[in-house]
Image (cartoon, rainbow, N blue to C red; front, top):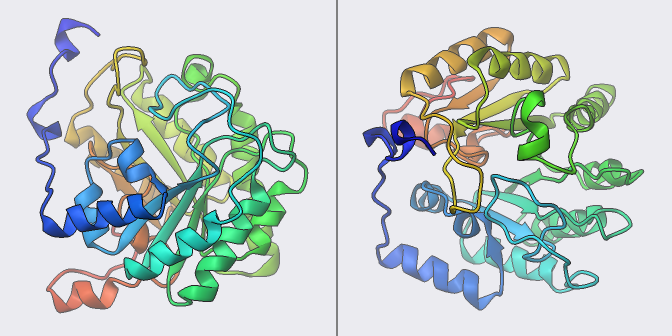
Length: 312
């Protein structure tokens, strides 16, 4: 990292709240032997999201079969198979946390014949059986060369299907080795095509992290590609280097630049654009489903309930 980017700017300094409610939630997640991306990725919005009734669970173990240059999740050879009790544990956590919206993501499991798609479906089904009112969002891997995996997940009827492209095509080799921009875009396009064929209310979503060496015009190009593929929701946030072993931060992107991304994204036709330095792919996730549960609450508290607000 250069001297110019060695210190985080003021707008990225966040005080993490760890009050009694937060400690109880963290203890309960540990008791059920669950992994949350909120904790694994050191998300700066963890208190806000948990307090708003949203949490992101990471299924299929703690070890990823890929080695992305930006990601803090452990990479290596996973333990064989999957935990058959995990769907029930996630559903119990959703119930005990009284979640309004649950995001289910996973490590890459290239070792599994279906990439873990059936396990995703079982988690969705377990949550729906136990907490029918909870909105369910899935954030899946690309299921590279796993025929039928996407349909297995979509057959379980999540409210939101998400897959993150993460960066611009030019940077895929250092940022997402083992992944393919066209493949990720194709997965999103296939999900949107099925939505359109069936006339369903499924929302299709993706995310971009900036500060890895991309140019603003390249980010705009990715947003255009996503919109052309039928993506409804896009989130953009600042890359924060997890450890010295990860890719360095190439630049700190000013909040005004994020505001510009949001403005241009909405002009492209996205239903929601979440864009800001601390935004992560699950930030405000409860607002991105077809029937966002917090609109009435927001109105009651004096907030706005306009669609496509993408606000912070």
